[in-house]
Image (cartoon, rainbow, N blue to C red; front, side, top):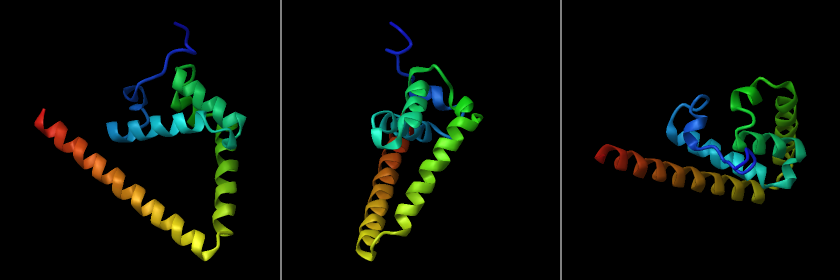
Length: 117
């Protein structure tokens, strides 16, 4: 098995995450970035590198190259958000609230399962 075939586990992100749940969320986000060409090749490369274990998140955080790419992507997202119609903004806010509720419910379920162990 090569480094390219291997994917890190959530536990390997705990050096930059505050909790196992945050590590799992980060892992999911990295998978999304790795598979989404609209984020650009540099961020896809970064996500694939972290997922394969070739680079660590601390290396990403300390890298001007990747931080610049992340910043540029965030600027694009901010610009798009500023130009949303009122209806699109309302739908986006509803979707964000629903996703937050679902994440909180999932986290509550994990916490209850962990307490029973």
